Length: 359
Image (cartoon, rainbow, N blue to C red; front, side, top):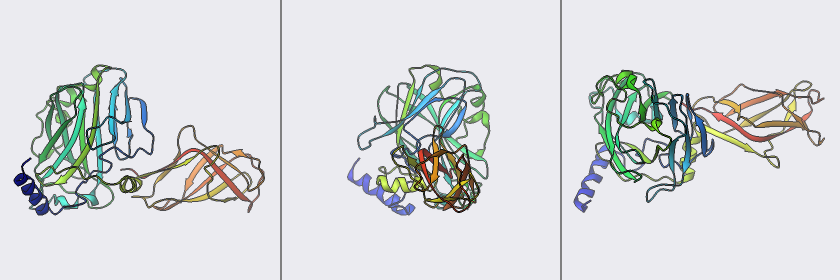
């Protein structure tokens, strides 16, 4: 890039009002992975994997999703999707999403007379050369616009950019609910490719969500896609990726999801009490969430309580979270502890307690 072009691009970014905090995507460099770094047998599922990234794989074939150390220069991680069993039926679809709260995209001015253009940029690597599709959508209005991009060299990191006009007909509610969707498609059966791709904003039609795609990650167990360096910004210019520190990225992720971690030698929770016989309970505090979260024990995790200092531990047989707010929740359960009201209870977590306020 010439110096003159660089200065011109910087001027465009300045005019769009974002010299910093311009990336509307969280965890675009795939650094944060509170839920884990590998997710096997992902089939018939739409769920979060790496923080803020949701993967949908509706097919009988399965994929594995992982945080990978394969990344282009300047990055340390990528998100990798690799096929472990195949399915290429007409109802198959497989895509990656970032869901963005409405209050974080007010700068787009959608629904006004002067909606702004947006540009998405990212790095992608795959063994599959060919045409892929990318969509953005507004949740409240149910409107969508899409584009294709092409991977030209197998097993090589390639940089892609796509720019879309703004939408004066879309309404985005600027609060903590879902407002804006980014969607990368990696497989689509004929049920999703039979109508023209919406290259201008229009009402969402499922039959047009991935028209033009020529690849299918689900077609072979040798297929894979890696993606990283994802940036969504206002304007018609793809600027260099905005690297945030790991701590900044983690804090942004924890507004949506936080994991309490414990082990056999640690994981002590706040001191609680026995409200009635065999009913241990305690309050937990967490970083402020988007909304009051759902609290759950990750599969294979355990809570164990005893009368403080007694040394006799009792595994919880049930688990309930109650009176959740954006900052605190009461946790209570049952076990075989012969405690009475008012006894101090010490509780230990082995595994993960999940605090989920995702969109």
